[in-house]
Amino acid sequence: MLLLNVVQLVLFRRTAGRLRRLTHLLQVGTRGNLDDLIEETNANVANMHRKLDDLTAWRRKTDETLARCVRTPVMVRYRAFDGVGGDQSYSFAVLDGKGDGIVLTSLYSKNSSYSYGKPVQQGRSDYQLSREEEDVVGRVLEVRE
Image (cartoon, rainbow, N blue to C red; front, side, top):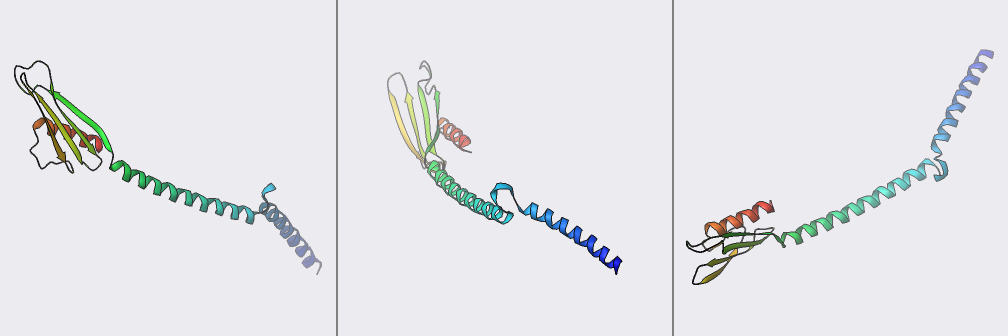
């Protein structure tokens, strides 16, 4: 019986010690107990998820807007006709993120100057593009990717 009481006393002390450590672990300083900390953390995580969803929606909207904006216009100057000093002719492409826009070309000769504008959709035009016009469209599309 005495041996049983001693074993019970030892087990009681061990259990009491573990209970004290567990109680200490559950107390999280000045912030209250562990349950309060977990609830606060869950609320913070939910708030972060809402903010992340808002940022994702904002980014999607911004990407859609940027796709409609002009991207890095490119201009190439060249000599279209022999006997003309300097590279007075040029082709200039202005396209959005979808490859839609225009190509402007000015051809300069000694006696006259001609200007052309050609629409571009998805990087292609229904009108015949010159080598220089294809070059500027290609450069804009490279920058876009």
